[in-house]
Image: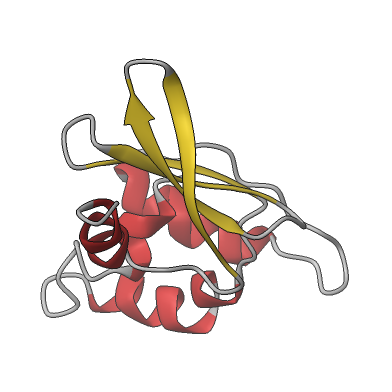
Amino acid sequence: PGDGGPMEDWMNLERLRVEGVPMVCLNGALDKVTSGYYSNFLNPELGRCSDRFFTRFEQVFYCKPLGAGRGWLYRVYPEPWQCLRETKRGLELVETYAERPSPAACLERLKRP
């Protein structure tokens, strides 16, 4: 990491990449990089880096809370993506997906029984 904060760290990951060698990024907040959270207008270099590099990542472990305690979007590679409902008894599997669903799609699914 350099002195440029997380944006510089993300761009440094691309610079450190070696073709054919797996790269592991832990707690990288890659959703922020790939979703447009950081404006491409204000951060054009990071936007280009995201398009070239981070959109190719395969997420092997993912756990994102959905809707203030309603549920979770979860995945452990190579298993499918899972939408889980949080209940008083624990977690309940609601649906599985071959491709990563959007958090909004999972929230809509959690509204149904």
